[in-house]
Image (tube, rainbow, N blue to C red; front, side):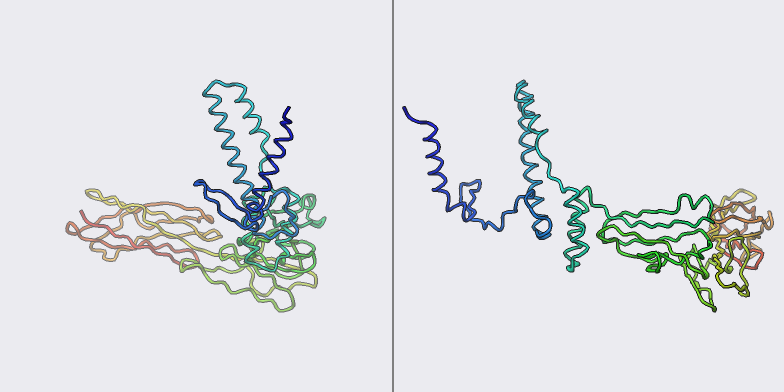
Length: 392
């Protein structure tokens, strides 16, 4: 009797010996039956066997992609088998294939591996390679989401706020730009908000500073010091000053419509520059701006009278106070305002009001009659926008 098992083993040994040279050089056969020699170093290592502490970033990316491609190929093959079995009504083969798909291991970068790689990114001296790998890891690891945690434990004199403190988390792609916020709580017995620190006793960044999202978690502590804080919501300026001689920062208006009204304390009182602080005292001031945007909504012409509708938007960060609105014709012979001057007691920040003027226009058909809407506040500041009416 022939020993079938032994024959198979011998045959396999012959095949192994015959192909040993090919596998040693990494030979593969393409679809046309041609043998192509590939260096062993070009074949990605098995991802599950990689040492995340020593493998290069490139090796990790290539190996993981190979694992994903292999999984995709197997999954697609099994799903094709499921479809075929379903169409043929072969229940056993269908559920066998379904079980194979369920048991197919999905490539994954584990939490432990991610922690190791994040630390390597932070320690890397090759910034270009680190940036590329961090972007890749952010896309491929569900556990890689670096955070900047801004935190502060309030002193007891903050009342109920002291029970909860302050904590704000920023999470975005590593390498992207992050603008640090302010901590708008005025001042406490510790002083005023001076900035953010990587330690609790020294300012590293000020509010408004732009920093690069790190490769690993970062905690920044809110630091309070005795001094004066100047904050401006319009320009984004925030400056902390300490010492005996303190000067308010010079601000640049965003455009010509903005009028700087001065610095105000939390109660709305305007600072006059004569305030003196005792040792250990602090103060916080906020920049006040007025800015009015006047827009012509529409011009409606009738047989006798026409109407000019407008909207006034308060772009500043304080109430406009009382406003006077006038429509001033370029030539009073061609345009007469019949509804007179309009008034409003004020418009709150980022709010708007609308109104209209009744006018009479004269001239030949096609003539352009010009006027100007002028808005003036109680301080004498004014904002203008032109109006043109084409005579029908």
